[in-house]
Structures are given as structure tokens and as C-alpha cells.
Amino acid sequence: MIAPILLKEWRGNVLENVHHGLVCGIDAEKQPIFSVGDTTTPVFYRSALKPIQAIPVFETAVFEKYGISTTEAALCTASQRGELYHQHALQSLLEKLGLAEDQLVCHASYPLNEAPKFERLWQQQPHRKLHHNCAGKHLGLLAACRAHGWPEKDYEHLDHPVQQRILDVLSILAEVPKEEIELGTDGCGVPVFAVPLQHMAISYLKFAVPELIEDQALRKTVTAIGDIMNQHPTIVASHNFICTALLEDDNIVAKGGAQGVYCFALRKEKMAFALKVLSGAEHVWPFLVANLLEQIHYDNKDTIERLHKLRSKTVVNDAGVPVGKSTVHLVNECNKMEGFHA
Image (cartoon, rainbow, N blue to C red; front, side):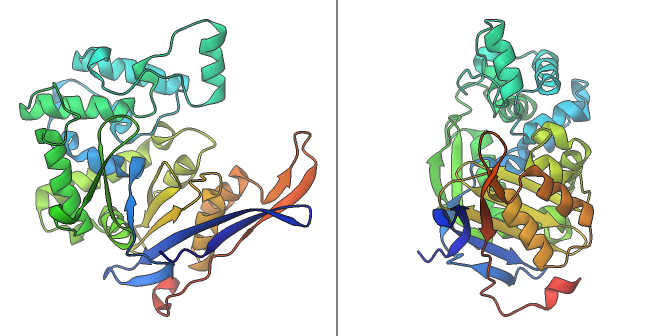
């Protein structure tokens, strides 16, 4: 695997960390316009798969049947971080669906964000499955099972109809034959899939350019998922997080995954990007995505500014004193540049 340096971190004048990785950007014709490293490398989506995993529930009428709000529906795409607005929406979704928390196969957890986590610990409250980062996805999978008439038991198994449906639509969106999609198990207990990075970008391109999807019903579902993510950006992640910062821009559909995977697509420009930081670091995402947007001359400067505000390139110590810096090294290996001036 060829994986150039994407970002360096310096402490004083000494190089302290190096983050290698892969980047693929494509245009509306699914042709590469930005490339770093070997973009044919298979990469697991991890939680960047969630918008696709939400398709089996969004293609049904379950939200209307149970009076589920768009806020609650957005949880099916989310890597929620346990803020009170997440907790309230999750509890409401659970109750409206008439599901039991024990039906979720994800492990009991405390909220990811520090404030709600410390609040529960301070109040000596137990961890809950409903506070798992992927709880919304699991509720969505169970809701899909109910709507389609599939068994709710064993929904985490690869041979279950809900997982086979996800695999089917992933094959369509990423344009990879099912038998060539690599299989794994995600941290929350359900199957997770890997495709070549370039095809990961292709799957996200469909969220920005849904007319590329031939099946009209699937096109409608994918469009609805992207729209609802933009309507509720804080539900998909949380305040002060990159997914929310990007989804606040109605032109962008974006989702990250564990171990350094990030995907985003631009509607107006008809482009999509997928990247993999091989160190698994997530704190470098805002630097890299902002740099990519700057390189393509993205015209919404407010979006880029939000990314810069998430994390400074200046490395500081615990007292806030500058002690180093981060430097981005994204060098496009692709010669096709004309798509960058949309």
C-alpha cells in the first residue's frame, strides 16, 4: 500500500507525529480529480456506513406509522454523542417504536461527550445501551425489521434480511459486486463492510447526485436521508464536531467513521471525497477536510471557517500556551484539475 504523509505534528522544532493516509476525490462522472496514495485499497466504512445502513428503515413508512419526528429519524444515521438532546430523542424513539432497550445488541455505554458522561457518573447512574454511540442505528435496524416483516431477533447476523438489504444497496451505491465487498464486524456488533476507497467516494457521490441512481425508489430514499442529515446536524454528531459543522452547510452530506475514515459529498459541485488516516486519528479531520475544500476553491467560506474553529493548527499545552504546530501535506497526485473550479 502506498500511503503518503497527510499531516505532521510538531512540538517545538521536533517532529512528534506523522499521519499517513489515502484520499480520493471524484467528479460527477466518477472520475478521479484528487488522489493521494493507493485509492484501490479496501477500507472499512465503520460509522461512515450509517447513512447507507439507514436505507432499510427510510424506504418504509415506519416513521409515519409511529409518529416519529424528523429529529428522531435522524438518529438512524447518527453517531450520537450522548448530549441531553440525543438522550431525549433516543428515549422517545424507543418508546414510540415499542421496543425494549435489551433488544439492542450494542453494549451498554456512557455518553461519548465528557459533560453528559461526567453528569451520569456524578449522579451514579448506570451506563445504558441507549447511550451507545450507535444506538440510533440499532433502533433504525429494528424498526426496519418490523416494517418489512423480518424477525427482530438476530438482526446483527450477516444472513439476516436487514443486513442482506444493506449489502445489496451498498453494492449498488458503491458499484462493487457483493462478492467483492470485504466483510467484518463493527464495534457495536453488526456487520461492517470494506470497499476500495475510490468506490467509497462513489457511494457518497450518490447522496450529492442522486440522479446517478437508476432505481427511482432507492434514489428517493437516499435523497431523504441526505436531507434529514442536513436538517438535524447536531443529532448526527453533536455541537463542536466536524460532521455537524459540515452538515450545517446544505450543500454537503458528510459522515465519519472510526479509525480515521471520513466521507463527504458536495451537491452543487457534484463531487465526493473519501479519506482514510492510517493512524486512526480523528482530530486531524478538520485540518484535512478544510484543506481539501480550500484546494477546490469551495465558495462557502463560512463552512471552512467552522472547520478551522474546531481545532487550531497551533499545538498548546494544558495551560493553553503554544508549544508546536500541525502542518497539512495534501499533494494531489491526479492531473485532472478542471473539475475544481465549479
